[in-house]
Amino acid sequence: MKKLIYLMFLACLFSCLNPHIGFGDDILNADFVVVDNPIEEEPEEEEEVIIEPVFDCSQTVFLKSQAEVDAFGLEGCPEVENLWIEEIDGPIFNLHKLTSLVKINGFLSIQDTSISDFEGLQNVTQLNGSLLIEHNPELFVVFGLQNITRLTELSIINNEGLTSIFSLNGLTSLRNLTIRENNALTELEGLQNLKSVEQHILIQENNFLSNIYDLDNIINANNISIMGNDRLTDFCPLKNLLQSTNFTGDFITNFNGYNPTYEDVVTGNCSL
Image (cartoon, rainbow, N blue to C red):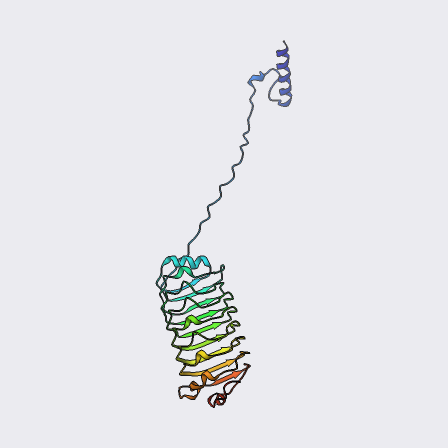
């Protein structure tokens, strides 16, 4: 009896809530709608696609990060047209993976990096264009370039920590030579085998450069400009060159520790 009363109560309650079901309808025959509310699944993370750089060894190769330097090294190119290395997409700490490189037909430019030397380029024996080493504040020595014996132009500019260019001692001739704004450089050892600079020698604003003894073997040059080297007072290594008929251009000195004229040097009044 109690069960019957309980069922009639439920039927009355359900009828009030849903007018489409009468009091007399069998509660057991009522339609119930079950609404699914599934738990939303988290979307799967897309796998990151890493696109490896592609290098054409027959063209100019630009290396803009350590990852690109290493990737190019894995290519195993023995020869490139030109090579430009500069921090643009990330830091560059070393060139260790470039040991397969033997020949550069044009220029080599190394700018704005964090390298301390050129280890990795020691197998380069032919560099048929110019070499630019500019604004590498961590560069300490140029070790790694010791097997290069031929260049058209050498420019070493604004490398604050550079103390030695000794590894360039294979060079015998250049078209132009520029040594500028290397404030830790005290001498030019590494250029002692240089015999000829066809166009211009520029030695400028190397604050600790105290001698140019290693230029005394140059027998052929056209123009020489030596300026803004506060500690440089001895120009006698250039005496033989300036006295010869092989020097045909201008000799300019300004803002050094001593500033002799052309006549001063050739007559022996070449140092303080």
